[in-house]
Length: 105
Length: 123
View 1 (cartoon, rainbow over the protein chains, first blue to last red):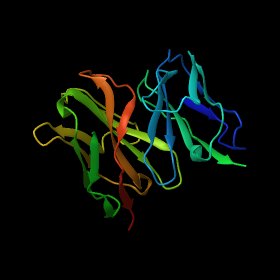
View 2: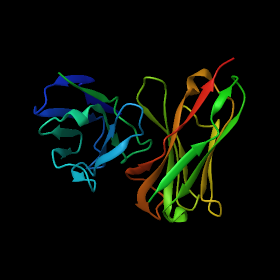
View 3: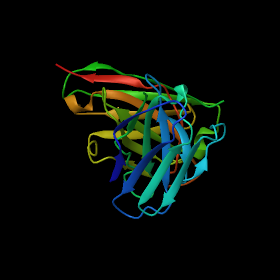
View 4: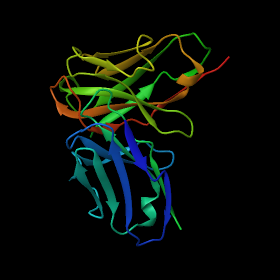
């Protein structure tokens, strides 16, 4: 089970945004982060907890291992408005966190 | 480039069946595992099922185990989801997704997604 927080946040353009994801069991670094913009399919941003997918802006990053993980946007941009999901793939089933809805203040 | 195009969604009565398809192109279909993930209206993502590159491993969410069946046809480069005994709570947008891991019975990141097909279970 993946516990993601907060469920929603509102921040200003240029702010640093942090989302956390906690696993109920040790999942090593088997964690991914996805971005889903309104009306669109999810997009893989970060895999293996901290590896950036090709083409993803460097303002996005991930860290953590074991049970505690963090996703960071260093300088929030208007195009980052989306819902972000963590997902573990160490255990069966490969569960998603509940999502974090990011809005611009 | 990788393309995944889902089809087969629609409105169906509770207890009835539906089969979803996902036409894949732009990669060697027979070398990668595939997933189905669903999203109920206004809700988060729920993983549904995985099939390994060669079809020998299949895993299901508890919520669909015994009712849904995932399969693949290498010659048609198409993924399927047979959904039986449908319930109102199965109403969702169903996505197919390509796994990143090559030739494995386990799964990794879902690196490419289709646009989804909507299934509505209602009387």
